[in-house]
Length: 113
Length: 110
Image (cartoon, rainbow over all chains, first blue to last red; front, side, top):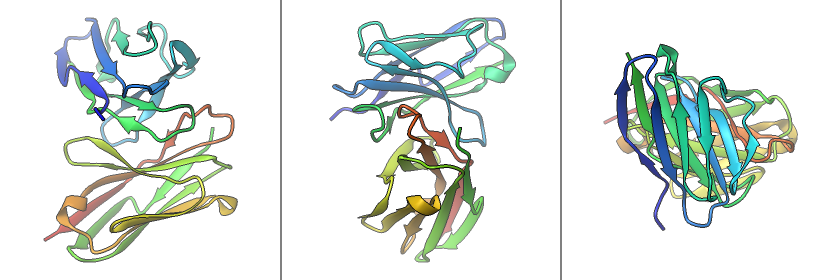
């Protein structure tokens, strides 16, 4: 089966600009997660979707971050405006259902200068 | 939320050696997964193991849920085993979300 697809692979932007990341999960996986991984740390959950509904966005900085999964398949994560501290790898993962094993995409490495 | 502690933080092995990585969690979990992050950043799921023991080739894992820890065993290590190993757990109310530990960085020397 095809894995979790993410794009772009790398992105460099200036602070205060906006950026968007895209994720296409494994076909049939109902649950989709966005994680942020800062260099040297473990991934941290930003938002979880079940089909096209948000399950948990308690750790999403909603003043600048937004995410959607309109048709319950692919998802986009947006940052506007970006700050220097947003420099990180943004990882998308999917699982068959809540509580299932995760499959991660390759991630998007964001550098904010 | 739960706290996940991993040990050791760093490990250097000679090729062919065996190792044990440990993960302690502060509260009950019903979702426990081990991942390997290779030097290129890709996270690979090694085990979904909320309890019991599983084996996959040279890797095996054991979770003792009642004592709140999990172990990852690597036997006959190879240079391709290098990278960071993460343990991640979620409790009954977590809806499938995982809290990750800080990882164990493994370097296998030829």
